[in-house]
Image (cartoon, rainbow, N blue to C red; front, side, top):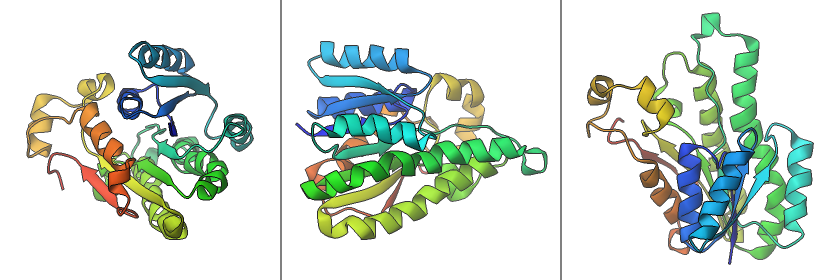
Length: 239
């Protein structure tokens, strides 16, 4: 049984990712920071359904805390599937954006990617098998007003994906990014009405979290062993 970690695993998309990876037979670490209670509930749900999971809590922006917590679990062997899903929005047009808004958004998505992934690499390399999947956004590809910070953070993952995939290609480890468009969630449903979705999305609907999870599940599988360094959009034909 391979072990997987999903950062931001207690959120809507994160929970779908955790359920899919558990369904595929992996032991899943459901990561959360502020949502540890929800992560525990999800892990219990997965176990009740016959899967294997446990909650894990730390702030991805705290490099020391992340390394300390991850090393506890590495004592039992490599974590070979890493899904960097943690990210936050703090939207504002840039002329009115505060430095803290810029820094925090980049800290979670981009520095968080490094803080979680880097400590896991050497054990993964030693195992000669690994899957790293980063969750980005259509905003990183097309841009979006009010999201200069978010688009910059997620676009940074695209460059990191390309470079890291080259570093790890000979070790049996793939690195890819999934860039979702409008995905149904309690927060998203409140922000995007049907009229806006019809105008922006050629398929005239929001995507489902499970559709994102199916794509990630494939990229984390043996079947995707020759796919690496790619930015894969899932957005209903938006771009």
